[in-house]
Image (cartoon, rainbow, N blue to C red; front, side, top):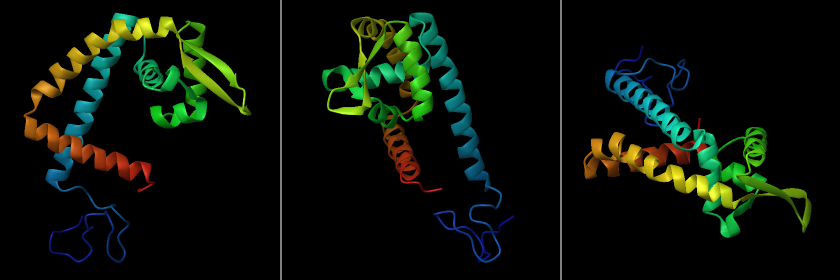
Length: 174
């Protein structure tokens, strides 16, 4: 366990002094409280989102994120590799998800005419309709369980902090 006045205390980046693995020391009470609070809130919110999307549109949260990502793209389509990057899922997981969505008529895959290796995923009209059906409930849920639970200042701090964490993870900062 590290002690606040010891030289092997990890710095802000999680780096430790001699003999201590980076970030391997027990979390301080404030760190543990933040971590446990984040885990509880994210798990509970994810459960509520899954329940709402299943009830309103027979979608999983992963399905929803793929459809929303496609809806925001030019011509409502993306190459599969770009869709995986934007939706933040592995290529293999995306292939499975898109196959499921395609079987339900929500997404259509087509070959890229300029690159034989590439495949497009495109949102169908039925996919657009399904999104329109679930989005109002999704927005209400996010507002009720996250937005309305925090002050404007807390939302700003949360957005800044979580964006920094996401940027660090995207950059490979472990």
